[in-house]
Length: 414
Image 1 (tube, rainbow, N blue to C red):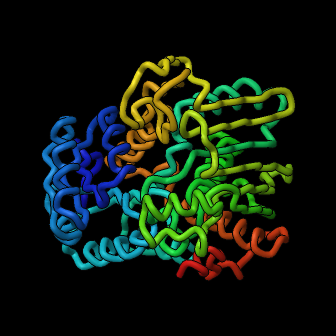
Image 2: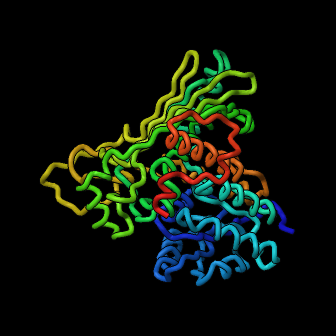
Image 3: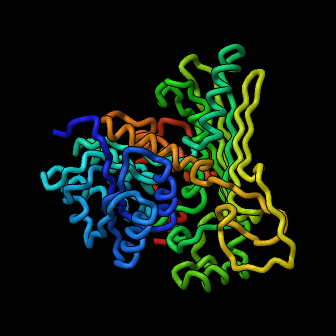
C-alpha cells in the first residue's frame, strides 16, 4: 500500500520525441519530482533523454530496454505516456498487466492528448487505468496555460459573479504542420488536424465555460457540427514536398488527412442555459509560428488571448543570417523580420503548471483536474465532429452509435 503524500514523485517517461522534450523543460519548474527512467524503442533516443535529465538536474534517469523493465523498476512511481497515438493503447495494456500482476509498483499514469483514436480506444484506456487501481491524469496543457488560469479566475470572480455566467467560448490553434510523419498518416494518428489540435480547442473552451469548482459534467453536450477541408497540403507542390520530407508513407496526393477543421459545439448548463463553443484548427497557417487564440464572452465582459501578441519582439534584418530553428517560438517559420518571442513557452502553453498539478496530485494521492474521464469526453466530441463532417449533418448527443466509428481519413489510410 502506497503511503501518501510521497516526498518525491519518481516519474518514468515512455516516449522520447518532441513532446517529451517539452515536458522536461516544464519539469524544471516543478518541485518534488524526479525523472528516474525512460523507455523508447531506440537506444540513442533513450540515452538522449537520460542525458537531458542529468543536464537539467532532474534526477538520475535510467534508460530501459523494454517497457516491462521500466514498469518493474523500484524507483518509478508514475508513468507519462508520450508516444505516438497508435501506440498508446498497447502501452496502457502492458501497464495494466504489470500492475495487476503485482510486478510493478507504479500507482499513477498520465497520458498525452488525445486519449484514443476512437471512443472505444479511449474508453478502454480509462477502463484499464481504473481496473488496475491507478490514479490517472489527462495531459491537456492548454487548460493549465498561464493566461487561461489567470483569465478564468478574474472573469468568474469579478464579472460572472455579478452579471452572469459566460456563454460563448472561442478557441483556435494553427501552425504550418507537424514535424513527424505519423501525424500526417490518418490510420496512425486517428485523423488529421481535427484530431491533432481540436482536442486542445474543445477542452480549453469547455474548461473556460465551466464554473470554478464545478464538475466537468456539469455542462452537457447537446450537439456538434463539424467541417473539414484540405486547403494547402493536397496541392501537388505541397503534397510532393511532404513526400520528399517524410517518405512514401505520407502520400497526400492519394491519402490525405484534413489540414483545416471547424467545430460548433452546443452545450447546456445545470440551469438549462444554452452555451456555445466555436473552434477552428489548421495546419495551413504560415505566420511567425504556432498561434493560439482564445476568447470567453459573457453578458457584460470579454476575455481575449493571442499567443503571438507577445510583449517581447525582436527585429532581424536580411543581413542577419542563421540556420533554421525554433528558438523563438514553436513551429517558427522565419529567422528574419519582426519576430514575436515567447520567453517561456513551457509556461505560457501550460506545460509547467500541468506537470506541477499532476505531480502534486499523484504525490498526494488526489484526483487531478483533468483525468481520463475528460480525455474520453474530448474524444466523444471529436468523433461526433468527424461524423458530422462526413455526413454534412449535425450530430445530437448522446450518440451511442459513435462508439466504434472511425473517421473517414483513418479508414482510407488503413
